Length: 92
Image 1 (cartoon, helix red, strand yellow):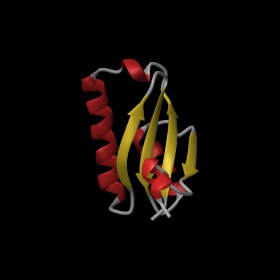
Image 2 (image 1 turned 90 degrees about the vertical axis):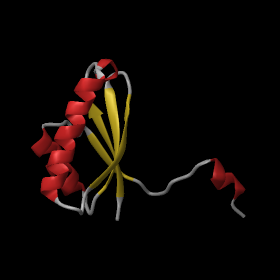
Image 3 (image 1 turned 180 degrees about the vertical axis):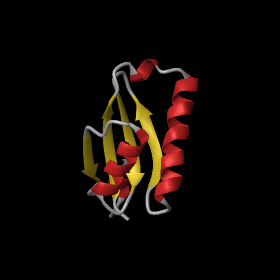
């Protein structure tokens, strides 16, 4: 299944409290449950004014539907072409 990186512009994201992040997470999970098993949230990275989310989904439209139903921005969506890490340097 394709993997996507979603950039969400949220001013002050880095200052959100744990309770606020928990609420966002619960909202996201509720929408994911409604959309079904085809879409899965792996994790998100919170920075100063943005949140970068990693999702598995069959297409970009499902990512956009999750954002619409959850009330989340999805300012850019990029399908992951490949994944590298330090272990990639060890490949023959």
